[in-house]
Length: 233
Image (cartoon, rainbow, N blue to C red; front, side, top):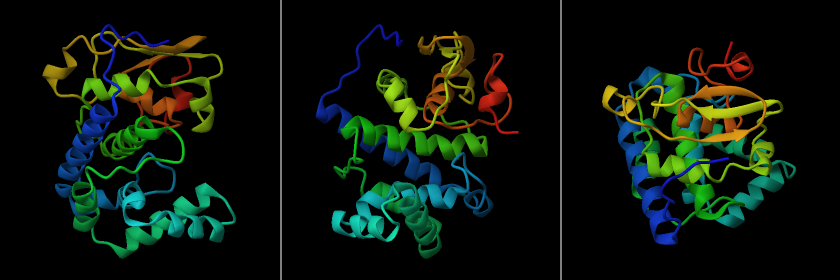
């Protein structure tokens, strides 16, 4: 399981501060994307960067009754509802406005149906990586945010996100904070963390977080006998 020499601060105030900082950082990043990058595929199957960005602000822009109405229209399928709303909103709003939604609602107290503020942090961090990892951008998620999320990876959470880790041990690569981090970050000690049992699957902390959230990564980022299983062909 996780190995964290210094326990992360999990107070509500600290978690909300980390969430707000993550949203502002992602707004900064989105605002500088080229038009073709907005149309590029993300790590979320079937979604471009536009759909991911639109989905990230759904909870800020739509009231709970409206979300429940959308869920009813989708026959109770959360997946169908989120896919439909992401596509509709991606078509309805220009890129600059999708980025601004994150900045303007950085301090919004939204949380997903399960997981509380840790779930909200995971939602923002992972969807941000869905964009940057797919585009090959050198974004390095701050270590405290990664530690919080890695320490809350459980068999229940991996099952919820559809991550098939049977026979696999996730293990961070020593000395690597992020596969796409700038040189100073890549030379730091990084995060020491492992999860599961079986044949080691190694990579950066943030790439393994994506694996735990059911994502397949671009080639060359993961190593081990089962790397191909978690890599886009």
